[in-house]
Image (tube, rainbow, N blue to C red; front, side):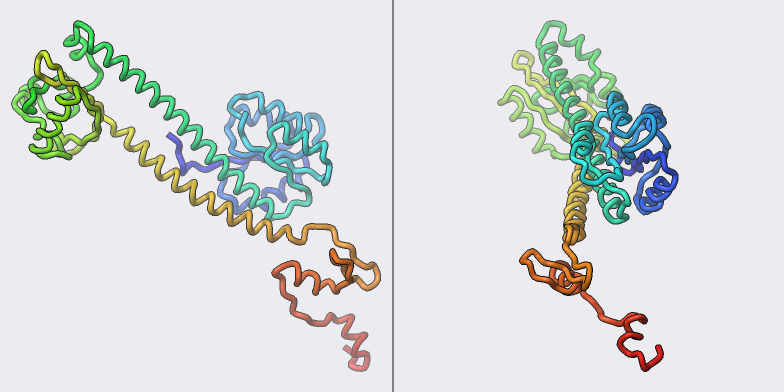
Length: 358
């Protein structure tokens, strides 16, 4: 079962100690355990020994560079889908970007690293990695469910054969033989262990004595439904001898020849816990996706002024996209949410007010 409370792990790979310390400082607010190595070779060994949720990989390193290191790390099946964020000091190199993405990198970030952008990218990637892990867990549970259905089908085929009574006695599920009035005629040992009653005690009881979801009248109607349909599969809750309750999946088949019902019951306590955990997981993922959307919106605002602007080397005015020259503060105010509070610096004050001896 996926543990949503387990702290995630980040591996930072950088041969430069200063860059490493900067990255550690920028990520100290991220809720994750961070490990560091100083070379591609160490990164390969580290990812072999431990599992990580995100790798921050410097591109330019002596010996094994970042690209080669990731290519070798990806050969390990458990690291095939670990997200990678390359850190590069060379902006605008499309060939290197393509190579990195072809190796499974999620994104690039250029040095010097912006604290806000790095934190947003790392947090987003950790959320996505947790989501991916959840999907893998769900896929595994679905495969188990398919296998369980197949086993149930095989079980039904076995029950239809001769020697059915022997199969019942050796069944791994709780079994009860019940008449059409709902009286318990026979049970196996597992049924006794599950309910806490002895064979003799159960032999004198009615299904309604154990049933939590249905009263006596409801049990009788359900029995008639099973007789009419020939079989039924459903979930219900049984009350044990000590008063506690247990969720069970019930498979009931009516045998016309004996006018009795063969009932198999399986404890599904763990399944119910998984379903509850899955619901909580989906809620958490939904909340994280909303957070990612908000963060991306904030990132888009940050990037508004990220383009190259022509600026006059003399008066320092900026030329806008219509060809007009504007003051820097005017241009920034019109293209962002930034507002200016005008003041005067000491040097300008001396030039403007030379008689004041400032």
